[in-house]
Amino acid sequence: MSSTNPQAGANRSLTRSLWVMVAGSFLFGFALVPLYDVICEAAGIRVNAAPSAIQASAAGVGREVTLEFISMVPPGSEFELTPATRSMKLQPGKLYEAQFVIKSRATVPVVAQAIPSVAPATTAKYLQKTECFCFTPQTFQAEEQREFTVRFIVAPDLPQDVDRMTLAYSMYTVADAEPARRRAANCE
Image 1 (cartoon, rainbow, N blue to C red):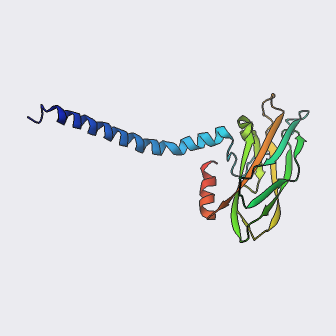
Image 2: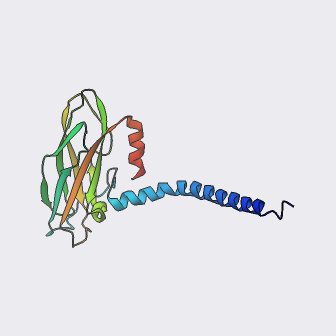
């Protein structure tokens, strides 16, 4: 009688649907890691989170691109982040450097991580950092101020219609330096 019971059939159908939903959620969890990498690259977040092996070249001779530097400090941040230079005109293929002054407003030592982003986001892969304070977490003593350098090359194959880019940094306190290194590795 239970095999012809409509309630039992509805329960089996509901159970199958729930198992399919559980399996789909489990698979979606595994898909998030590569999806996160794609989103990071598309948004220009954490692109080039490790030193680039690009070499300086004369391939961009005669071309000029303006690179602007800004900082985006979240409200209530324990840091002041200031670019020493607001913008520079550069030639793709040449090695350049820029300085940023970072001051901790914390009253105790803190570990922080700088997070870069590039705009327009489609140009992020062309800004190749060979040295950057954003590659590793930084330790600051109470109210310490330091100057940091970022060295970079704008790849000569930057699309011709791009004549202006922006490199922005945000600074965030990290509770533990080890998790910050793992997060940085996620978008390399």
